[in-house]
Image (cartoon, rainbow, N blue to C red; front, side, top):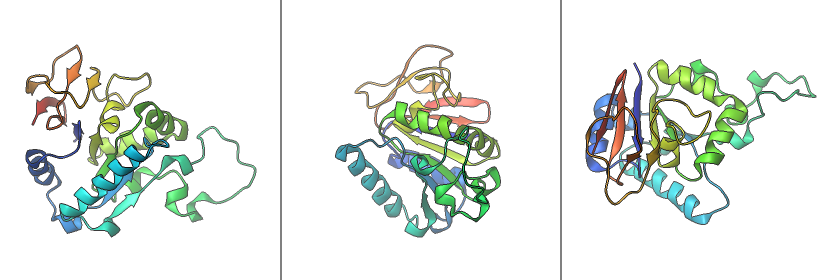
Length: 204
């Protein structure tokens, strides 16, 4: 069952309640794959990542249970390797994770930053294929800003969870309720799109 939460600016207090209700584990037991690859050479974005990790720790999630997985380290899926290395013996931070490895975690978190850079890295490495399979298997997808946009219709070759385009950090958001069939969706910093199976709604 797909569980996807596409936020504008992370978890508000009400969204945290939804998050914990769906994960159904104590905070100290939750394991997260954090993908920071939307970050560019911008200290504002880097600071946002630090604030995000700080917020996760404030939620009770242990630092050792946050696996920072930067796709910029991963070989392109079509690259012809010159050295016959057994990638299974390479630390997981430097190679493409398998679906089974991903499903040992509870949450796949895509952080904010540059959505185009993030989606390029997702598709370049082939991470789109394993991520979609893992999410279909029940891995909770949590998007923040750019991490939400790559799941929607903002860019070509997106992850395809929402057909609509999403605009984040809006002063006025689209009315909460069932997801519109078409048209742009505007999210305030306390709103999100919640997808559970085939059910999709704007919530806050």
